[in-house]
Amino acid sequence: MSPLFLLDLLALLLFAGVGLLSHGQAVSAGGLARNVLPVLFVWLLLSPFLGTYRRPTWANLLLTWAIALPAGLWLRQMVFGGAFGTGFFVFLAVAMGFSLLFLLLLRGLAKLLRLW
Image (cartoon, rainbow, N blue to C red; front, side, top):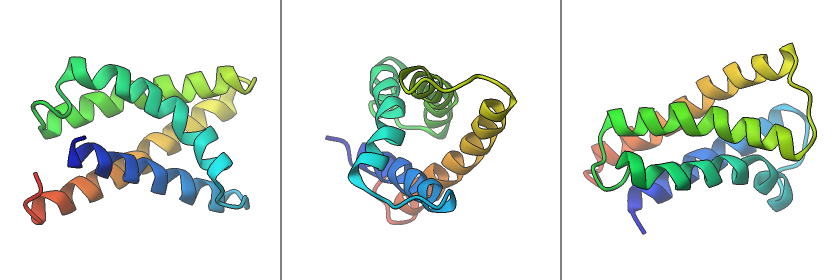
């Protein structure tokens, strides 16, 4: 398993954990799974085709993120029966920004530590 994948997974888990806390919910395995698994499912489907870990570049990371995050959040909304009104699109915009922040911070740390 790629060390970069593990960093990306950690970034997504941290993002989900902060999201749970910011909404007054406890960080639990169930809460993290509910919020991360749909995104991770799409991420893992896409990453072999996009070369996310085979040819790790900033561009591949951004492309994977730009497709997997909205698709994963859409899937999560479908599975849990959420509405697709204005609230979803506000959530999507916030989630895109903060998830990218976590991904870039951890990938940047990996670059500094020469793990990548």
